[in-house]
Image (cartoon, rainbow, N blue to C red):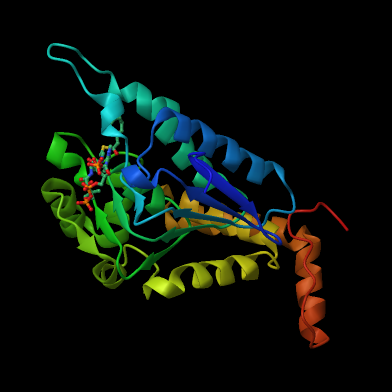
Length: 266
Ligand code: LHQ
């Protein structure tokens, strides 16, 4: 297998990105950050790409920041905020804003920023063997990569605070039961299920799905009133999309729709 820290595979209508530092449980170093950014940007630039699948090589999904890269010598002050500003924050913002669904297939342990990058994806599937751990508190850090924002929204403040403060790992099954992730599946079913979902998205009305992402992005800070207005505006936009007309026509004609996805017109 290639020793590149990120592997990208093109499928029919979607891409698969594999975090590839298996010996380090796919912990992020600078090279992996750079390669991931490039791979995500390339997926965004390709209008035939209508979904993105992110998974990990080997037995882990991602163990967060490579701590060997961030060892402080006695008396030295390491400015960790720069790492967030430079890498994790742009990554999380980008994943949330991509104009197509992003699916995390969490194959093994997801720790620290590795956990929160997975949770930032639109849909999280996990193998039964996977675990989720907010490991930050073990080394005196604060959950980052959106963890303190996402966790209370996904699982409620009581569980979020406890996971962040204790760094207790939770199983994929518990993560599903708590609503932290979408679904826990048998280990062997993880990639087939994730790819099936991506194949479905590869034929979906992608521009409409991008508007759904926009609606969810705005929802946590909007009042109901403001969200109703936003839904009106987004629906207006969706209605102008050729895929809406095609969806309705296909329904009336009792046939499968042929959506153009991210293309402007066919
Ligand atoms: C690792 C790592 C790792 C290097 C496993 N680094 N080698 C943002 C801003 C800037 C700086 C700081 O951080 C952040 C965000 C963050 O992500 S902070 C949180 C960083 N991550 C962690 O604290 C998790 C550290 N890892 C662990 O606690 C364990 O490895 C977990 C629970 C993930 C898995 O445990 P095990 O299954 O028992 O595996 P292991 O510990 O034996 O790890 C296997 C190998 O991977 C081992 O290397 P070795 O050469 O001894 O076989 C580890 O050293 C290496 N590894 N995580 N983050």
